[in-house]
Length: 279
Image 1 (cartoon, rainbow, N blue to C red):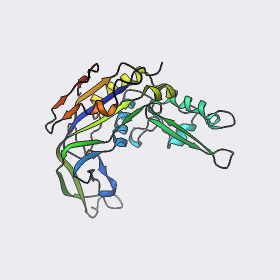
Image 2: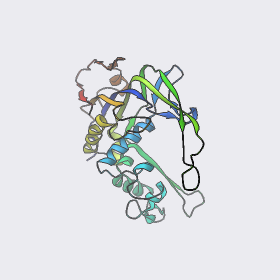
Image 3: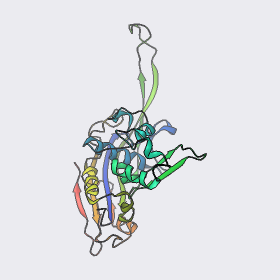
Image 4: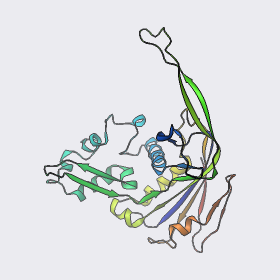
């Protein structure tokens, strides 16, 4: 059975001496908007959700290079793999309808039935075939509560020279950037209407709910040292109907997060949120 009730959620998390989401078009500096507020893209947040789900054994279609579990080199290879994907026959529009292919993909991969996916394949026709799947779970970019202070440090990188490695290569200069200290918040929602199309269930929603408090566990790197990014609180609003008692915008506006990470909730009639501590 697909998701029965509309769900809204928010994640409050803190960053200390870390680069939460570097911008490759700006020297990998932490992303900021034009007013100086820190930003973490929705794509980055979905990547972390996928990784945490993959850590607990869920089947994920969009796998990162560092976390590939099937040895397949690309999304195309994964989609066409008999063992891990749909199989070539499933992508043949003469043998299988696009709707059936979409159902197969949603059954196989957790992230496809959650966030959706666009499958574009060649076919015997001139234009090929494109299969769009719209997922029921949406998540916004995260923004800091106050403008962020960014520290940039010049670093020296040394590499071994050619040959047997006994010669030291020439040093190269680089830059490393970090957000000194900030609190971020992101919002998301789950649509039962869209869940009907992908078979996203109440059980799937519970898995997302269990994943959000530990969003940054196992995500450490040089840019994000262990413990430098912490989920402080997850706010979970479960409506009593498929359409929801209130719009997502109205629900999200009831949360007021302060620069120190504390927050205020202005409850709406008949909709009491669940407050979940970070991992």
